[in-house]
Every structure is written in structure tokens, then in C-alpha cells.
Length: 268
Image 1 (tube, rainbow, N blue to C red):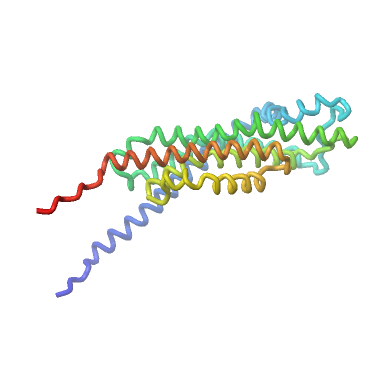
Image 2: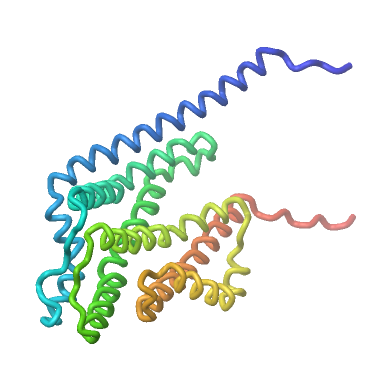
């Protein structure tokens, strides 16, 4: 005899679904509020931030006196204000990244095992640390090399810079944010390993194919189409690939320790 599902059970499931949606909305609102609050704080020091953002370009130009001291110009009256607003916003995104990653962790936490719930601090440190580390790497290595090569090309051609602030910031932020996202690959592979979608043996076996794919992605994503910058970014991605393989191996080893394979029974 078939038993119908009680109506109260259906209502409970619907309430549970709405509770998840409400929880997601609250987490998004908290993250958004943190970003906007830090944007207001960052705007107070916007000129210092602009000085930091343009430092690699100014250093490259200073080494080539023929380029002159004048680097930037604007044609739209609101462009300086919008450039400072954009710089303040993305500064806030970097500063708020640990809190944003924590909100994401708090949202998925109920679906995790008790042992995994205890690693909240490690998750926040790993995700925010990788993101910020990628941006720092791009600032001190990738963008510095890119600015130096591009300004050298301009000096050799006898050109003088007359750059727009918004266009410069687009290139600058694209480099930093893209590198920060790329440095999140160990975290991504951790979750892929948790769901059994990748394994370390396959990653090590197919490292040559992965290297070709990394060089292609590096050439496509590197701004300015400069070979030296592409090589620097490609080497960083390749190192992250092998680090990710180590992360996957660690997840596999941990899973094998928790659930060891059953030994075959001997025939009577």
C-alpha cells in the first residue's frame, strides 16, 4: 500500500529552501556592505592609492628621460573622479576578501562534515591569502616588467605618453585581479578533489599537456601581448599547477586514512 508524503513534510522542505535563500541573501548583503564601507575608507586615501598604482609606470618612465614627466591626461571632466572611485572600490575588494571568503564558507558550512567545519580559519586564510598573493605577484613582477617593456618600446619609437587614467587603471586592475583569481587554483583543485573529480596521479601523468594549456592561457590572458610577461605568468601558473597536484594528493591521502579500502576476504 502506497503511503502519501505528508503535507507538513513538503512545507518543511519548502521552508528549508527559503531559509537557504535568505541565508545566501544575508551573506551577500554583508559582503556588499563590507566592500562599500571599505570603499568609502579607501576613497579618503585615494591619492596615495593612485601613487601606488602608478608607481611601476613612473619608475619605468623615470629611467627614460626622453619620455618626459607628463604621463596622464583626461578628456572627460568626470574621468578623474571615476578613476579614483574605481581604484577605491577595487582596493576595498582586496581588503574585504578575507571577510567575503568567510561569508562564503559560513554559507556552505552546514553541508560539510564536522571535521571539515573546524577548518574554517584555514579556508579563509588559504583563499584570501592566495588571492592577495596573486595580486602582489602581479604588482611587483608582472606589471613592473610589462610597464618597463612598453615604455622602452615607446621611447625607442620616439613617442611621448599621453595616457588616460581610466584606461591605465583597466590594464592595471585586469593584471592584478586576473593574477589573484589564477592563484586561487589550489583552492579550486581542493574542492574538485573533495568531489572526486580529479586525482593527483592523472595530474602528474599529464603535466606536459597541462603545460601547453597553461602557456595558451597565459598568452591569452597576459595584457599587452609581451612575451616576457607571458613567460613570467606562465611559470607562476605552472608552479601553481604542481602545488595544486600536491593539494589533491593530500586530500586523497586524508580520505584514504579516514576510509581505508576494505581488505578482500579469504575464501573458506
